[in-house]
Every structure is written in structure tokens, then in C-alpha cells.
Image 1 (spheres, rainbow, N blue to C red):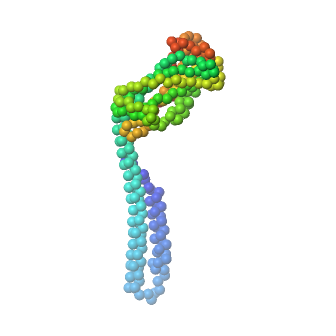
Image 2: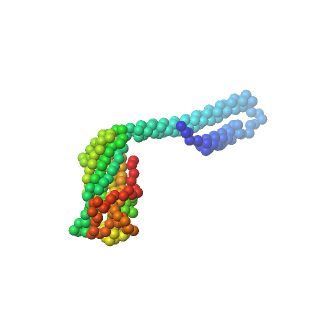
Image 3: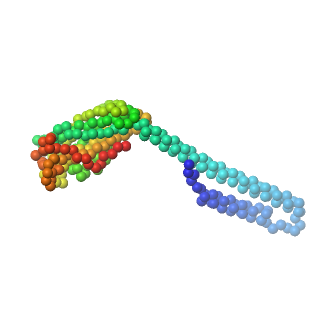
Length: 261
């Protein structure tokens, strides 16, 4: 446990004590001129009383400062103790928690719609590879018109879907799996705005969102896959507007942006 040093505070307290003691001596009989005819016994008693009063005042102030410092050290010790307990609890949860592995496959070809938009179906397979059940499991996905912008779009998409969904979600036991087919689409305006129009390279982004059974915290496994064409040539990875490739010539490529927490 690390204790934060309070050296500047202690030095300031000692300086204040010294200043107060000096002012007290200056204002007390100890700092005043004593007449020659003054009784020696009375003078000795007065000085003893003054010293005793000064000592009691300094002792009381020192006790107060010590109590404040002890309270600060106790609060710091309690904070460090809570932090150690939280770390131990997080370590236990990490070793016993659920983890979702997500595999995404094409469930159909890219289809261009009559209104100029496009759609594609993907199969999202979620498997619990952890040691405890995952609850409220559900998957969401979207189609991004430009794969280069997919990591940024994925972060925003994941943030919007980071919430419990007990109505649509389900429970996955350890080593259990569940597959969901999702249709994702983009509009004609989005395709027209693609950087390489009339060629484009879309991407499927999405998240599997779930809760841990230990503390009900919301966790996610995010994925990002570019939709590309199989073949050869300089532009073999890009699609062409109004001429989508058949399913056997379409693939999902790994792309940056995926994460698991």
C-alpha cells in the first residue's frame, strides 16, 4: 500500500506553531521588562504558569494537527484497501466471466434495390467461450458505404448499442452458440457519396452485446468486415454500382476496428 507523503503540510504546520509560540511569548510576561522591585517568588510563579499555559496550548494544537493527519492517513489507507478489494474482485470476474466469440458470414449476395440503395444479408454466429453464462445476448449490425471509414462508424455504432436488452436478448451457457441472420442496407444517397463511385467497397460493422451474470455489467464484442469481390486485377476488391457480383464471387475481408471488452 502506498501512502502519500504530506511533507509540505507538516512543514507549514511547524512554521505556524513556531510563529504562534513567538507571538505568545512576546505578548506574555515572558517578553515584558521586569521592574527591579518585583518579587522574585511571584516572578518565578508567573513564569511557570506562563510556560505551562504555553505548553498546554502548543500540545493541544499539536494534538489537533496529529488527529487531522491521522484521519487523512486513515482515509488514504481505506481508499487503498477498497482499491485492492476492487482489483481482486475484477480479477475473479475476469477469470470466471463470459466471453463471446463472433463469426460473421455472408448469407446472401449484395442486392441493389430499385430505389438505388443496396442490401446484403449476413449470418452472425455468437459463441460463449467463457466460464459462466452470458445473459441478454443480442446482435446488431449495419452496412457502411466506405470500408475506410468503418472503424469510426463502428465506435459510434457500438456506443449507441451499449445498453441491456433483456426483451430481445437470450442467455448463452458456456460453449453454447446462437446464430442470427441480419439484413443490412445503405441508401442511394450514401452510395452516390462513396469516394470511388461508381465503384465502392462497403463494410459490415456490428456488435454482440451482453451482460455478465456476476455484476450485470454490459460488455460487447465488435466486428468489422469489408465486403469485396473475388478475382484478379487492380480493382479486384471493389464492387460496381448496379452490377453486384454473385454470392460465390463475394467475400468478407477482415478490417480494422473490432474489439472485445
